[in-house]
Length: 75
Image 1 (cartoon, rainbow, N blue to C red):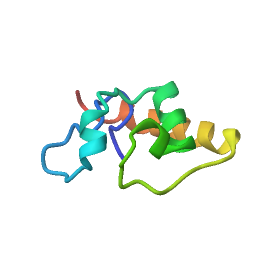
Image 2: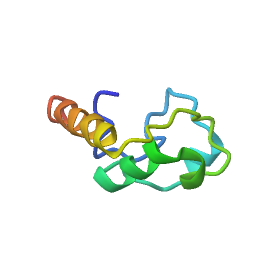
Image 3: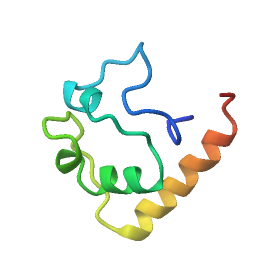
Image 4: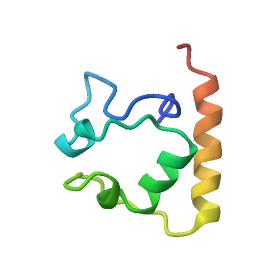
């Protein structure tokens, strides 16, 4: 997940993303990650992602952590 914050969804050529995520046209930021972690299927119908984080405090903590990883990756 290093470098995901700020990157376009389905932005790594070597990874096999679902067609739904490829078509999402989303840049991962605070709002989009919060929506994704809340309900991936609502954001990208047909996605392969089944993991959800129902609690807002936990989503915020995860996103805050992902932000720290983004700072350590050269752009």
